[in-house]
Image 1 (cartoon, helix red, strand yellow):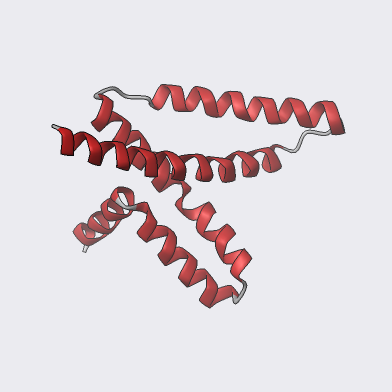
Image 2: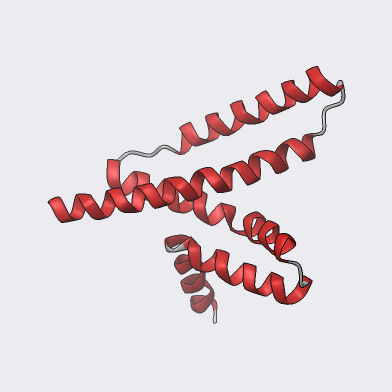
Length: 126
């Protein structure tokens, strides 16, 4: 039983689109609201895209970029917190994390597609 869970998680990491679609469809059934389903799918599958992109970067460039990803994440959250502090004088860490998490989904989705295309082109040319 434990092996099946590992296989499912590895499929979701390898092809995060499957996880996004499955979470979206399940969320539509539960909530009956498409926008809420999109938000749920984004929140639950962002980690799969982050892991997939880090693996693809390692496979393509044979170098780990996890430290750079963490640094960019920390700088981004710092910029949002400073912006909140300057404009509202009250910092909402939860709101800042939600913004970064959703932005990370868009960024890593785009990076995933680009890196998959680069990987395919690289294999064709070699």
